[in-house]
Length: 180
Image 1 (cartoon, rainbow, N blue to C red):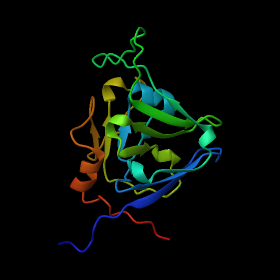
Image 2 (cartoon, one colour):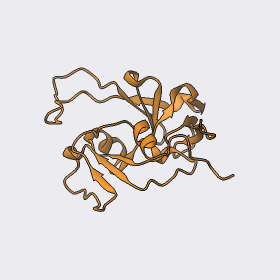
Image 3 (cartoon, rainbow, N blue to C red):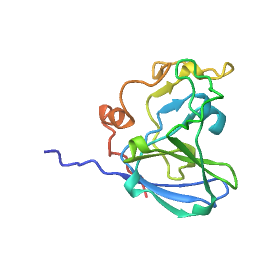
């Protein structure tokens, strides 16, 4: 049996105006997956990235009253276009600060054990991945150029595998520590 068991790192996060502060434990803190879907691009900007945390450890330390939720109307998954007649909301709930507008984290009831903090809302230094996945590139804005390189991979939709599987495949699951 290996002497080093995976250990989570506690990540501290906040919004720009500092009214909302939170923490979460993560075994998977490498911000390697950049999403280009229209909803993420419109709500967070280009080259946005969520990481994954353990929902059972998630704590809003300050500012619960400033946290608001945005859910997009579901779209036609083939075309990516909004269906104006649709009233069904996406289960993907984007949480943001109602004071400064910072996108903080996402949560989806279908994956209730996880929470997905927005990488730029994390104040704890994050590790730099050796490769990047650009996902949902079928929906990227036409003026956005994805960098080229041997460690940059593009996917028209979602790649096979989860954030957890990527970290395990690369030997990074539960290995990140912060120098104090």
